[in-house]
Image (cartoon, rainbow, N blue to C red; front, side, top):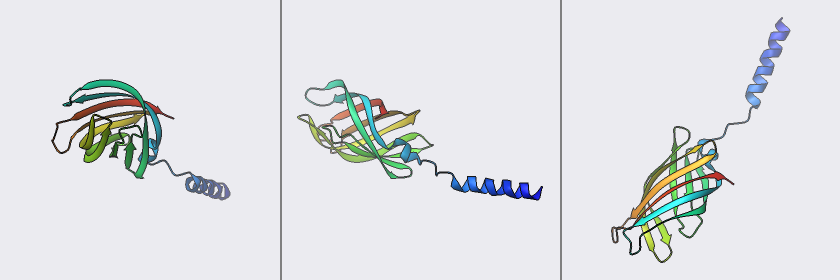
Length: 146
C-alpha cells in the first residue's frame, strides 16, 4: 500500500510541475485580426459614414495591457488594459490620427472591447485633442483572428 501511495504522489507531482503555463490575458489578444469596421466622422467639411474591411494588429505590452494598431492609412495606435479576463478598456489617451485629406492631428481616444470565443469586438471614439475643428470619429468593429 505504501508503494502505491508513493507512486501516486510522485506521478501527481510530476504532472503538476510539467503542465505548460497558461496564456496571459494579453496573449489571447495577440495577433492580426480581420475586422468589419463601421466608421462615422462628424464636424468636418464633408462628414461621412462608411464600412470597410480592415486589419487590426494587437501586441502584448505586458500580461494585462496590449497595443492596438490599425496598419491602414489612419496610422492609429492605442493602448488598452484587459480587465476581468476578456474585457478591453481603452482609457482616455492622446494619439495621432492620419485621415488622408480629412483630418490629420492629435485626438483623444476612449473605448472598449472584448474577445469572446475568438471573436474580437472593439469600439472607440476619437475627438480632436486641440479642439481646433471639433473633428470626431466613432468606430465599431468585429472580426476573427487571421
